[in-house]
Amino acid sequence: MSLIILFISGLLWGIFDLTRKLSLEILSLANVIYLIFFSQLIVFAISLCISDLTITSYYYFPILVLISLLNILSLYCFLKAIKISEISMSIPLLSYSPLFSLLFAKIILNEHLTIYQHFGIIIILFGSFVLYSKSLKFKDLLGAPFSLLNNKGAQLIIIVTLIWSIVPVLDKKSFSYTDIYLHGFLQSLLGILFLLLILRVPRNIKYANLNNRRDIVILLLLIIVSFLATITQFFALKVNLVPILEVFKRATGILLSLFFGYFFFKEHINKQKVVSVFIILAGLSLII
Image 1 (cartoon, rainbow, N blue to C red):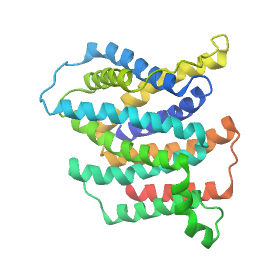
Image 2: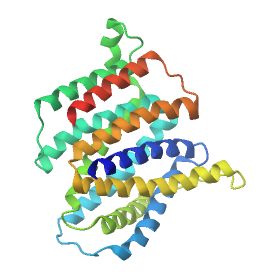
Image 3: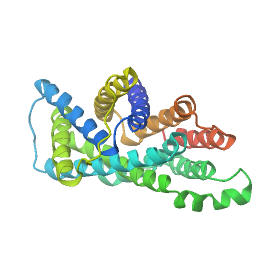
Image 4: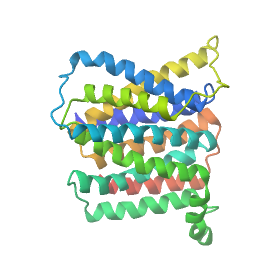
């Protein structure tokens, strides 16, 4: 059952990546952020009918505040990154998240790394360098780390990766104080409140064409998948180690990014992308 939940969670997050990039063609970045948070707030509010509505410790509240702020920052950086970069170049860099999750899980949840997991981390790093290398030649591979660090989209994704590595760890810690439904509601509610203070909706708002069936379908998918991806991740965290969840999510997301990039955005899938993806997947397999 835990493997099924992991697979469903990974699939939903991959589709969520697609719908977020497609929604940026319809709405402004700020409006997409507000739409995601408001839709999650509404659905989680409905789910409170099956919640225990209890919080067992005051330690929960500072974790909740931190998660809410990190979610806003990471979502903004992620949307900005996929808006200016190809999805097939951005999503594979999220493979760093199991790396950081292992470190955070060790510190916060006392989950430990094995020698194979350390080796897998090294392979993932090499795979990301291949992705941003000019070619597969040795001299270009040596300069790849500098190309990666100088790329604006890659810089944003690395920030997102770092944040998305610690948020699931904090979410799992939160479940020792409350249930997933109340946690999801409070996280969304606090996120909205912080958004109103931090991020103003721009005056020149780009609205969806409600007469266009494609736009309506994309926005409905964004709303539905946003909640389903979050709730399935919560359930997956209840029965799996955080790094294992991240490995499944990233492996699925990386494969889907190539597929979605080619079929939906006409991105060029070259040999370097394919090679780098297989290297990253090999590294992820060692972390399981």
